[in-house]
Length: 318
Length: 298
Image 1 (cartoon, rainbow over the protein chains, first blue to last red):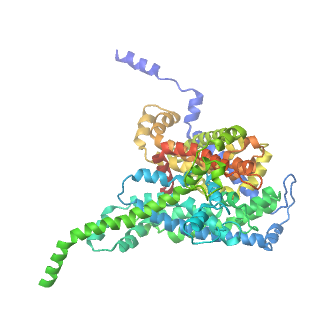
Image 2 (spheres, chains in turn cyan, orange; image 1 turned 180 degrees about the vertical axis):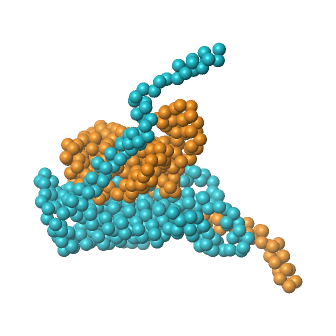
Image 3 (tube, chains in turn cyan, red; image 1 turned 135 degrees about the vertical axis):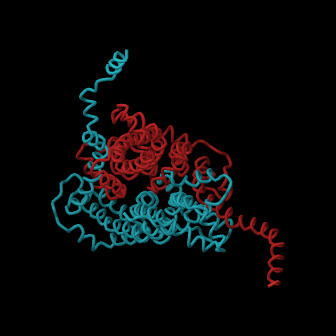
């Protein structure tokens, strides 16, 4: 009886065929699992990255294979005032916009960290500028910055009577630069605020209670509890924010296309103008490659300067 | 000594009233007022977009007789123009198709990669994980020129397939990291039990790990979908023919023409292009927030 059931059970168990065995063989399975992701990344990320560095040393044009010309592209760019203006504006744009985003974003996160009604609805609404395609909200800003029909000019001239002429947002150098920065800050606040809010919510309330009992002021609680504990998340969010602000393309391309007089070109838009629109792939690639040192520097700075090492928080350093 | 106690006692007697009044106004000024300002500033461009798209042209450019913040006689003329006299519906379809296809492709490859890195634990798995993370730090702006030549070499120029294959370069690193985090939270014991019961690795992934990681899959899916809907620079560089463009590129290159901008239809186009992703997002806000913050925390 027992023997019979035993054999039945053994027969009922499906015999694994060679395919199933192959998929249970760990090295093969690891290879198969990694293949799609690594394949895509190697072909469309690593290879183009290397190709971009190679292109920057050639005089490739669209439709014509290039010759190796050494550092000629970079030498040309060193003497190009338009390139230096783009470098300056990229750094300025990143610096000011990052500062604005983090100051306002941290403030918004602290506000949202209070007990307020409709909190989740508020959070959802606040993320909207981040969700909506950048180019489409940039178009709205373009319309808001219109020289004739800007609603800001209407408010200032016709309602408040503090100006006699409409604002001139985009037709001269510095106003155009500041207008773009404002649009970038507007778009970046939600991401910073929601990420930092998540960081704030992980801070244990008992720390604040202890500090309250010790008679601390709100500023002290922020300075000695909130800020240090927020530092690790702040460092990561800032790294991402700096990288994606420095390489921003959409806002500038949609609102000014680098004008007036090429004064609002970022390095990415200049690379596009020279590389794709102008057809000078080699030169465009050289501008793109020139962004890499800035990116590496910014990443290292925000990562090492801002993040407290784990041992400072009583954890093992690894 | 007694003076101070009396003083503090009298203070305590007065304090509650004053504190209650004080804290209510204070709370209003320090919390609600700034919050309202933030909400107004963050939402105003969308309000302006909506108002502009439903205003007739006669009101649009006449602030003397019409209050620009309100709509006197709402009209659908801009939306009608967009839907029936331009290829806008076509652009929407292309954007939707590209977003869905690239999201599916990325989630598929990310699930497998995250499972291999987190659960199969082979030699050097952490270096593969680190490599994938570093890939996220490479922005599209430094890749699009060499990618354009690569796309040309593959004969994919001016084909939506080029976008479907290149979008995973920024979707896969993100989704993989998110899913690694989710897989970490699933106890090993469940998989070990299944192994003892004679399940194969792939059965474990399909029957045990994936069902438990559904929230992670949804988060990664939403995030990938919005990112590919918003992508601009690749779509601008790789697509040339008008009918294959995505919404953001098409609005900027096809609708912005000449010296007089048709702000009504431009804003209607922006509104319609933002709506699908906003609606999609509103259904899954919590997943979206968790993916945003989860990726940051990892």
